Image (cartoon, rainbow, N blue to C red; front, side, top):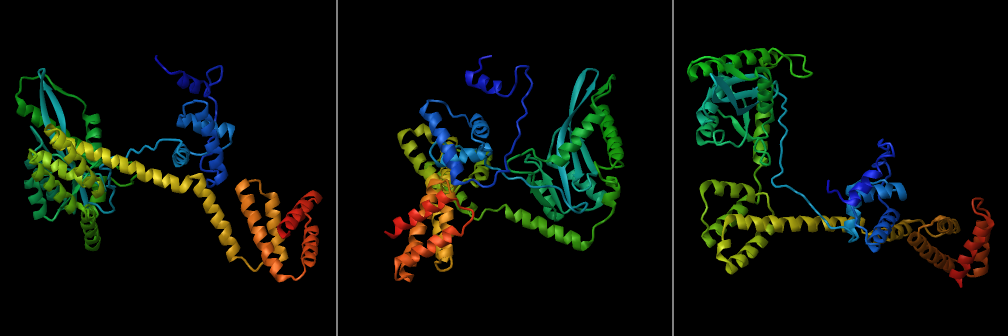
Length: 480
């Protein structure tokens, strides 16, 4: 199989001798916040593995912390701690573009989903392919207009919307994928004429039109393969497919969707009030405006300058794709990429292409993302940073506390005796010295001060005799 020894070793820890999976309780999320002691233990274990020349594998290391050190944290948190202390390489996988929108709506006939899918009809062994364009109401899942043609075109999209409007009136918006027919000028003009907003299914998922695709999946599951043993021409195949789709849509609209009590036909027949339609229409306008990046115009200007300055040869479709992608990168990354691209072109003129520039831009943006994540990890989980924050926290507690008294001093001495963490004990000891200095200024004779501190320590029942002696010795050392 070619498996590594380390992989086989990890597998052996998950099963017993009878190959029965071992039950491991997952306590992640139940351990509270990450303290400096937890960070110190994790760093110590990681450094010990590094000194022994062992490879640090994140998942197995997380399980080792859970079993050996009783530290139950997610692998992501453990990775952040290791990155903050320079024991693990930062790695980010941010995909651009990465934007999705929820399609579920609150009113019927507010948003329709339009998409096309290929259907095959076999007649006498000859396969005929057709494109079925379908409109589905997102809220009620009502199947309305459809059209069968040889390919997906703008005319078919308009014909489907017309069929929907004839039955239920104009919707407020339409969601579609990034196909050429859906985003053609004819479709945009038609939608603008009837004040129908065009919403993309998701820039990061050009086939993310889930409502219509779900409808196609159910339809193909019900209809199945269409095979006709006849010498009829393609028109017969088309008419048969249209009839089958008509029957399916009629039956589908009579069936409630999932847990809905009403069928789609009943839901869409309940017309929304004009106020609700106006409110939802305003919502669609705002959602369409939210897609406009305030820096997008400047990014497009930089792209135009790059093309004109380097005289890049680029076709219209590639230009549109470049204009879409450039908006999802930071301006700082674009500026650095321009400098690197200029240097690369000077060395080799064959590199003067748009794909080469976007390759540089992707690398530069990834480096910036990784550096940002590393800075975040360092600020939150670095051991020295956490110690400094704890020290400042103790200092603020002392500064905001009440005036120094014998009782406050004794309470701080108890904290020193009970605390096992070294850095907290050192901080508490410094606070004791500062409190004793304040008390020295209040008393003329040190003997009186020592007598009161000794009596106060003797009144504390939670301290043993050796602990009281240790506390008083600390007081004498500070007052000496």
